Image (tube, rainbow, N blue to C red; front, side, top):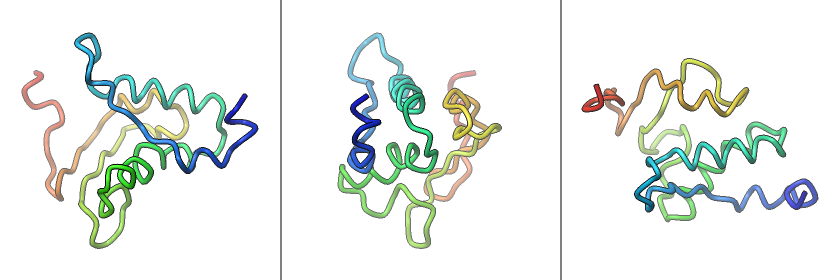
Length: 109
């Protein structure tokens, strides 16, 4: 209810990794947080600023979090649009790290 009454708060929300607990796989809690936020927020572009622009700005990485010339070329491509359903964040197709295509599943197979 709070977020519905105060939508301006979205510009200040950041995403935590949740990787500090031995029973938490890094990144999973962040995806769960986005799912909760998606249930109360209907503006897709506002939702995905949280793990990108907002979080990078908070930790002081000003040249990351956006697709923009001069910014770090770190990008994840999904097989389905995660703005339609947050669980599509699990459907990773390609990962670019510092401009290079990398295998996101390397070492997991």
